[in-house]
Image (cartoon, rainbow, N blue to C red; front, side, top):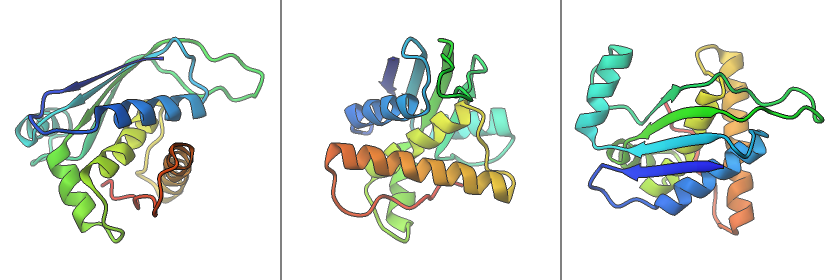
Length: 165
């Protein structure tokens, strides 16, 4: 799996954890190991510009996903997924820090960024949360992936509750 993490935000983030959780999510979703992903960490001003440009919404957001190839998890256990270019996930640590602090189970900015990375991966794979049933599926899968990764890493304490808007 080729995953690039580029921190352009000026904020120190746990880039290794972002890389690890992205790799875990893609493996869990059975995405071809030769697929490529880019994760970009930006400041609030850059995120706000992207949010306005692509969503026509004011203010910075937490995560945005820009899919390239239309990759999907294989539908059958024996099906071989094709390799491809997944796309870009853009994260904003300033928004992540605020959301983590305001969450019912308060957690760190880095824990929120890990959650947002998984959220972004799922968006790249075609998952959405516009409708209630879609939200239940996506957020359930997101929690299972984050919980599985945390367990594999031996991380203790409760997993961050979904705070993604």
